Length: 435
Image 1 (tube, rainbow, N blue to C red):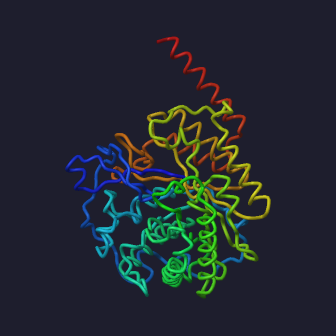
Image 2: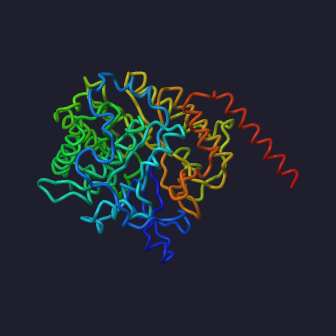
Image 3: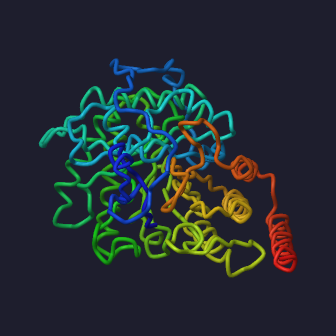
């Protein structure tokens, strides 16, 4: 699903520029980002770059349980994306230090205290989006720098040391647009990059999940966000198969590693979902889907700030996606994770809370855990997906986060959520009459 995630550099803040890039797509857009984030740490923040099991206890290095992904996802409740951080930077940052890349988009360096806070709030899944490109050498070897690999492992261990499940991916790569005439070149690089990642993490247990690609798509074309064409969807399937085959060949625990694969652009459109080809005879595969829905409420620039779950016209997209996922995957014994979802802050907490309860409960009821996107953007205009203010170390809306956690734990019913929506509508009407 298309989204423009507001990002910025420290220089941009000082110059009061209003430039934005996308959190997942990498496409440029326009958005007022003044005051989006409170506080930016400088890029000279030190990090541990020792080789090996950096910054962690190695708590989840060892024997891996031989369970299916369907069984595994039952243990996943609610996830949090640490967006626009390790997935930050651009071509101008290639070869820079890990800290410079990590802070290139204005976010502070990730600390263990930050991840501890996320876990303590009730999230038990940490998705770590990573752009490897800026720390990767040229072909034919595509060697990832040791310092970058160490830093990624350090952050992964922050989650694993908290007994969280960690999803590690390749995120803002610019080289895997799915065209048939580029397939061989892309496949070669994908295999070499994942061989290095998979080898480094081969001894970690089932708490570490690999996600082969983020939103592979034909960028800057009419097909980018519409579910793709037959060519794009087929090339993504072939790349997914290459990823799975590569990881399975690497030894250690990788034969039993749980692997996430996206369809074209990780899209939630029916065409993209129906085209996904799940590798056969492998019960440790998870379909990855991104769904910022309903679009007009969750993402669209200038969209509505209203969501009432008692109104069928507002819940149709969520209901339809759940039904499609159940029919195509869940009922066939295949696991699914919503790897990204969210609703921008339009200063409408009551409706966002009602939306979050309905969305997460609907997915919970069919066995699909959700991972919320958080880019640490809180103020101004643009794509305000910030939930945890990483500088102040406070949640921007505690009530919203509490509702998300409770919904993921199955504490609501759809009928209860709809009844709550009716109360919101009545209160709104009463306020209008009083005015």
